[in-house]
Length: 408
Ligand code: PCP
Image (cartoon, rainbow, N blue to C red; front, side, top):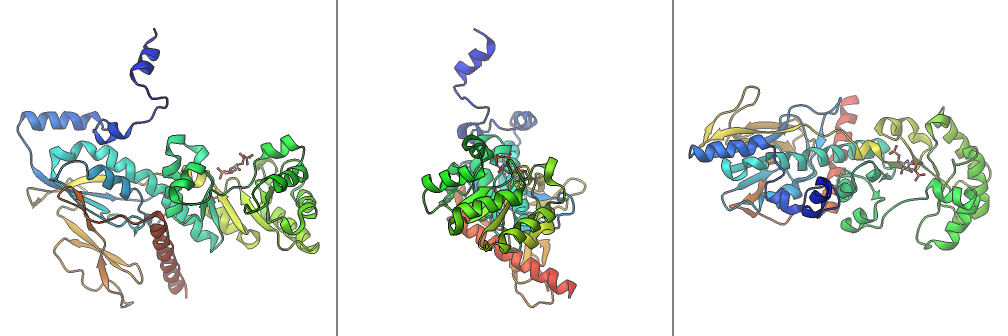
């Protein structure tokens, strides 16, 4: 028997993913942490510490991030014993570099090895939620649907869809992801259907005959011929039942995509099909959204969200036995992050220092780091993805208002 099949027999998992038990059991850790615990144990060192999780910088020119992954961190950290206390920004909070988003207090030996998992739960989900928020903000009220689960390991699909949704996406395409969010999955039709039925008109007719009437009829119009020709054909076929057309035009044909979209819009309107919406997907990100917003009604965003840059969170000791201490480049001592709920200005202060006046807008400074786990137990029920998303959209609205007032 080969070593691999032996491994398959001993490790009865089909896919190369860690189980809940391996994550909670501390197996998903960098080995230098297990060696550190070995040394601490041998030297009988078990000191109470405070650690902070923060980013020093964000990807590209991103001025802010959207925090995601807090619920999974709570699930992990509330299973590590009663000596752990955790403070966190609420999931969905807009944060900036050098603002601690999570603080853990306890005996280092109890949780130090979980740094790998804690950061992993926050870095990837926050990157996706931030990119989704950037796309949603760029779309200026137009629906943005998460289409990107196919770019990642299928085990991550529910996390990807949740991150996209709490970041502001209006819908998600993966069935398992939508179900966990209490949503109906959103999608149109793949090129495969049109190829198998022989054309976009045939696919539109068959889809309209077979699929539940509550599902919007959105027909893909870039498979064989020019988008405006196919759009008119399906509009003439389905008439008022046609909700929209999707343009997923391949790069080899995309050329001036805005111009193509303008032509489709013009020809549809000219012939009385102004009710037909334009749905766009394929290589869409926040920059492309800003470029084509004038003629687009809704977006499907895949890779830009599901393969978003991870946010570079680091976990650092800032106190040992109650005394401030930190490595070079890190400010020591426990901190609080104060936020003006009105204008989203913020300030980081030493934990027991009052924030003073944050801004001129008159909003009251509120402490962002709230108890998440007290003596090893969850301190309160956690918000639903819907509530988190609503809060993200509300913060984006305030960021827009701030940008507008600065530009005025
Ligand atoms: C892709 C599929 C995805 C879209 C594009 C996401 O088109 O529709 O949902 O693209 P993005 O990752 O670049 O944002 P195809 O690969 O042509 O797949 P299909 O024929 O199934 O639409």
